[in-house]
Length: 334
Image 1 (cartoon, rainbow, N blue to C red):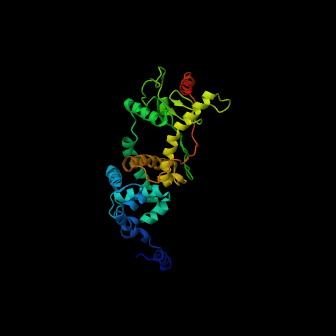
Image 2 (image 1 turned 120 degrees about the horizontal axis):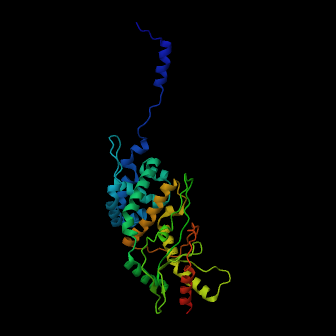
Image 3 (image 1 turned 90 degrees about the horizontal axis):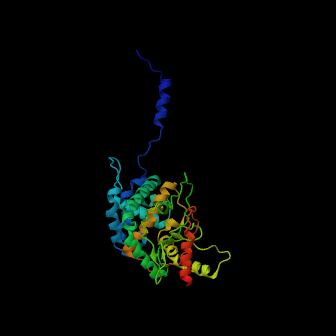
């Protein structure tokens, strides 16, 4: 016969009876379907286009077009126990995070989702935005397109054979886990841009290559033109620097307009470098998407300045890079 000593068993029973029951879902999250911003505010925003645009930083038609583009890439996983978060709600959460610049925790409270899951949703949605919009809004131009860009750039900024300006802005990331290496400049080194062959400057027979413009933080390259050093400048070099600086206003305006619309770019991003990278990528391609469809807001200010904390590309040897810059200098002086 088996015998159990009650003095031994009873403490075990008592201990088990006093264990706290663990909740599968906190009450604040279980009320998501009725109390979240998606349930209470979103239906009202649909009847107020102006407020919707202020909330999501895009028009309703643009929102629905974007949702159609990415919905298959942000489908919630199947579960038997919880209400899944719809693709539309995931997109709205992400847009509000980008527009407000607040924390995952704050967005999570507003949408009744844990801050960890909010971070996952934002990251996944930003990755889908980047992957789906890049071919549409940031395609690599072919040679004919490069030439059209150069013609338009000359019309706007009076700098011939220029296909764009290059700059960078510092984005603070709070408590990064790992630091990544910059791969910027590989397109130049590997000749992946497929620029057109050199072309004569207007009203001359002097052929010069198509170029990008940058400031002194970047190295001088065959297709990347930077200012002359400020010390002991000749008058032609001073004129060239002024023309280059004026033509580079386009990229400064671009950063300023993006930061004006997307508040997350103004503040430290509190997440890993990997997650912050996809958030930043999505922010800028989303800015292009909205501009192409909704235009610029009436209050847009094109005089916003940007920081110039730029990662240097590192110099490369090229005997002709100085003569190319001199060719542009002589063109402007003559």
